[in-house]
Image (cartoon, rainbow, N blue to C red; front, side):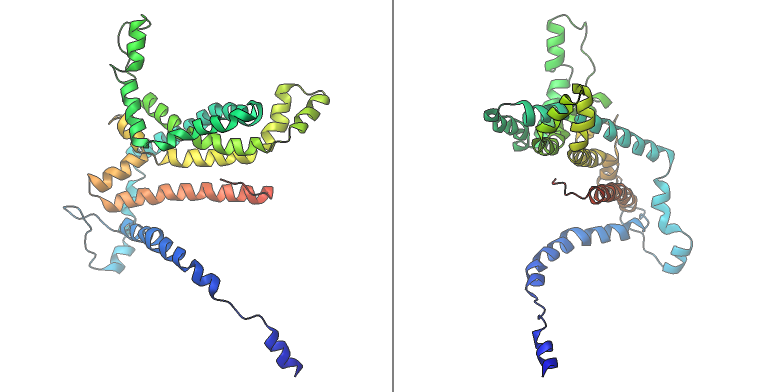
Length: 304
């Protein structure tokens, strides 16, 4: 009798949570996981003579010969390694510049700005998102070109004897990247700085620390979650960016994003484009895993 009662007291498994989450998994599986699996399979294929994929007659011999890794081996050639290196250092510099520019802005808005102006300042930071990123990039083309705003002002005031070549180079691409990614650095920093306990800064001052020492020993460690989140949010998009480099860099500045786009749209080499895309995704996944390890080690949640 007691055994029956014990068995009847066991909670019944409810399928409601699984049914409620089913649409989410269908969407993720159909629009995210399935395309990735297809691209992974394509990356091991061989390009046909006129584009498309070359039929595989003997799968065993194809795998044994190592031909399925041809696209990944091609990506290690010096030309493509140079493009990868350019993408990496430009993403690193973009992230550092966004951090150097964004931290003072976020600090002023969160700590120093009057309460009545915070909403206005935050709105000014978010306003660029209301306009298409493509249109904003075209606006920079008008500003940086030979007959653009900057050269017009420099020539008008005699600061330059001839128009400067500001467009279609690494400098123009860097400006576009920093401009486009800066809000993604400011917002996480603002979220961390807003929660900063100002009494700790006062305590550091009372203990004899100057402003610089207090900043590096108190403010920066306490806002490190926002710094790490901002770095991730800026570095990853910068690494795969292709719109800015295509418009502001022209054919002189080719990044990994441009290379992947060209393989699918122009060269019609889907296996090679898929291989590069997966190598780039592997780098991104490693960064996200490092970020997850950091948050777990710190024992706190970082809101993105």
